[in-house]
Image (cartoon, rainbow, N blue to C red):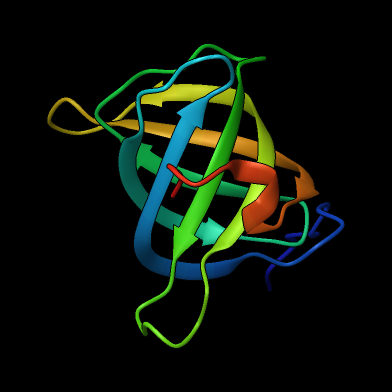
Length: 107
């Protein structure tokens, strides 16, 4: 019998897609892969390590061009080393954004 008790407030959905992100106050846009997504957070992988507490703007890019990207303000909760120079980065989603919130150069 499985004694596991789910303690998260929201279920996680497995996602395999591109994410673009920009650290607050910087102009450089970095890319990564979304691993999973919930109502309040996401887990992504990237070749760049991010310090917990770092605020970022994210754009989750859908697989179809008719669907706009999901834009959000997020905060890094943890960053763990993964395989081959990659980092797993867990983030909380603070606020959903519109394209007018991010400016013309993002995503």
